[in-house]
Image 1 (cartoon, rainbow, N blue to C red):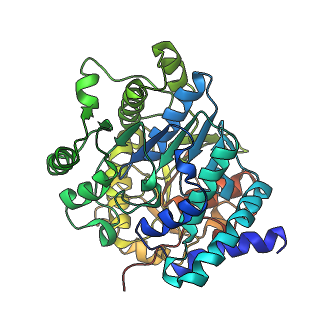
Image 2: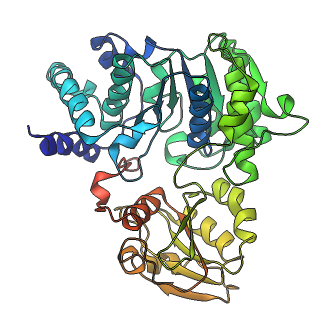
Image 3: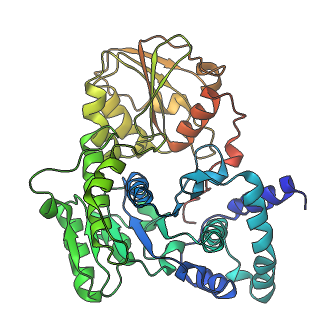
Length: 422
């Protein structure tokens, strides 16, 4: 295969869907010599905030002079964003080389038992692990993809686990109640391994406590450690200060990785995490804010930031009715005008479907458009308003960022396809 064909092969595996479970990942890991054991690691789960918390942990570790490996998902524009060394995303050529290294293992496993053939997410997780081992990272930061108990990353043996938050999302996979969702996330807990717990609803916290008692995992609550005040961070919003507290506490608890408070304090003021209340400037000088809060808990967290803006225009897109309704409920309270678009994903709601979910009491302007119409060229947005906020699906965030920077935007190259249960 040439490089383009290799990437198509790898990303094309997403069309087969996602299959939760760690058995396939363990088989693949054994063939690769268990690369997850090569370096100390942090393991982060949660409904929201796990990506930001992972980025903060990485920043703190890098500020201590350590070579870091950061594995997160999904990527926004380029697949190499998922696998970063010292916060430098892998180039496509490096991803291709890793895919070619893994392909013989994939083919051998599939030949022996097609049911055990690794999924796209399992292969890209393995790619991160073997790259971190090859580059001899001092520490790895691993974000779960979906849930925790049955996530491919759950083969790791972490120094510290983190559960950032629990809210309603992916109920078709994780359960219909907060307690059920929390139990799935708490599946990352390991005997004797400390777990940092963020701000959880009571039912969710009870489920995490029960799991911790069952496996013998000591819990450390952010609210207890920072009763006098959460750490400051350059990322906007009270929710990011809670994430900063979780990251700080996790790094304090990692016994094999000495911790210096001044270095952590500096790191938390220099965190980069695209698509999370990220402020850019359009070519005409107007403000463009991009945020991937796409579920009820996430959009509630950024509502104070949205409410502080002067009559913003909100460009909004969502993948489901429940998410769309939650987003519109909050956006309509603060937006002067709404621009409803369909993200580039087969599961996304059409603009007209979003419009049907609008609260009846919204009196502002409503426009149905496409992303291409709204952002026709690099640095250009054609809708009115001094402040433009892009809100909702990470597919939308990636598409807008690609257009803003003048990159070719193709949703087929972006994120995991996650079909519902049949």
